[in-house]
Image (cartoon, rainbow, N blue to C red):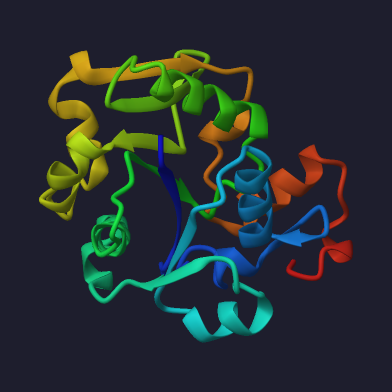
Length: 208
């Protein structure tokens, strides 16, 4: 199965005060961390959707082997980035069977979690595969091609959540031992907590 992965990194990062894609964790930017984990899970078809900090992010990273997509409807929120990614996928000669959507503010989701999602999807367990930890669902989420049109037409306010909630019967929740699926790093306090949990000194992280 051909699965594309897209990293959502187009937002203004208002609460954080700086681009989340450029924050550092264990010697990598958040974007580098996500890209490396996707590659380790065997996903070479990788996209990153950029917007507000596009030029800063491009200056910092070598994205020669990554498809760079621009979100032109930033006011729509994250679903605008998903639509941009889907347009890129549809423009190809061979369409992807699935799209893994990974917000850039979860840089520490494990490779094992991604592999578990891929196994469930490839086994045909359902067209929407989500990770679950402690009874709570998180990110990233894998959508099958049958869901692409619904994603494109999802309302701005609810975004992809509307597609996930529309029919619980088509959602497969994969239990993982990975609390990182729940940790959206949206604020300086959350970022410091992430570094503390990893035993890192914020002053040693150049993105801090």
